[in-house]
Amino acid sequence: EAGVAQSPRYKIIEKRQSVAFWCNPISGHATLYWYQQILGQGPKLLIQFQNNGVVDDSQLPKDRFSAERLKGVDSTLKIQPAKLEDSAVYLCASSLALDSLYEQYFGPGTRLTVT
Amino acid sequence: GQQVMQIPQYQHVQEGEDFTTYCNSSTTLSNIQWYKQRPGGHPVFLIQLVKSGEVKKQKRLTFQFGEAKKNSSLHITATQTTDVGTYFCAGTRDMRFGAGTRLTVKP
Image: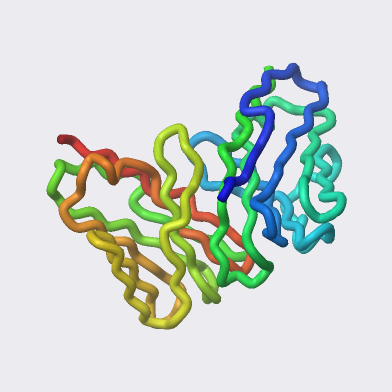
């Protein structure tokens, strides 16, 4: 079974630039999550999708971050414009369903450096 | 919102020693999940606890859920170098992760 795919793996941009991350979840997984993990901290949930609908985006800085999951499969997370404090690893995860009884499978992450 | 705290932040042990990390929530948890993240890697699911007072074992790992479902612990018996990594707990209601306990093991 293929795992969660993410690209790019690394990205370096200057502040005020834009960046986009892509995630392809495990086939058949209805729920998709985007997390931000700052060095030395635990993952912080940014947004959660169930199929192509948003379940929770309460911690997403909506003035600069946006995410979509068209067709309920792949997802993109965008930052525009980026700030220095956005430097982090952005993790995508998927699970079989919304029910919290299901484990999450994480992708390898995208390491973003904002200079 | 739900706050999940983990202690200790760091733990360095000699190989063969035991290790315990604790997870405490400000609110009652529905379920709790534990993940392990190796250095440079991504979190990998270890286990989920659902019932009050539940205890689950995976080889040398023992997971416990408190009676009030506000705390949990992970205990590793006789640590090995392969146990190195950061252990996170997460409350599943809003997937709020603790800051993790980073374990290093000296051979």
